[in-house]
Image 1: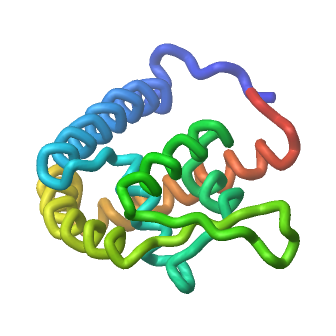
Image 2: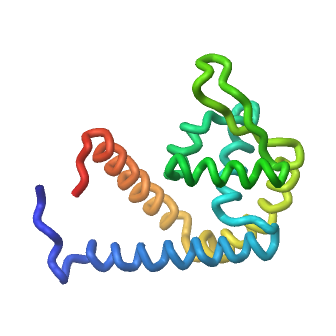
Length: 159
């Protein structure tokens, strides 16, 4: 186990800036989606994952892993989208224990409309602030962090 970073370690400052910036970015994106499309960022994430999935459907456990949602939070989120007519639920015939969330035609239409405005917001807040070189470096860093977190989770390590 490595020692805690000192106050002068740039990783400590990077951590603070990361936390503040990611929270601000998520808040602004959430507010923009609510104003422009009547949905939350969490709604958008679910619709995006299903839109890009084969046959526009995913098992609930796969959605949970992608979204890092608890089972109860995911269930609430899916129920909300089902009531809006954007998603349906299907029983998993292969094992009869699980279920699928399925994007409806109405959900696909709502997603496509929201995606146009959301892409504009993401470009303004994020993409325009980075050079392509910055994008490559940030992708590398975030991929390493994601892999590190996954390996910590798999080994039960939490530091």
